[in-house]
Image (cartoon, rainbow, N blue to C red):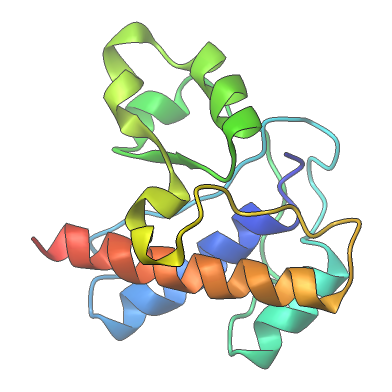
Length: 146
């Protein structure tokens, strides 16, 4: 939503996993929120702390809002939940709807469709986000390799 918890975590995880897979120079990754609440701000301190414990540095990221050009700039625009997917779809040009998916479409083994927002919860929520995002990034990388 505000691009300070889930999506910057996904960006940081995906960047690290792409680097480990030797694909960093072939895939462009960015994150954005569907709301303008935190534009220009760094990721939530709790997101950064939990990510850093797993080796992901989010500190250089700054929140931005999703724009219509993102649907032509990127091959995929991945939402964290149904609400954000719906908001993104309103910006999406009709010819680019195939680019819009849920992140967890790439991690069906989790049994979840949506990455829950950890903002109002405790540590366990941030850890769950990391677990889900790591699984989805692994699935997306496997898809990219095919």
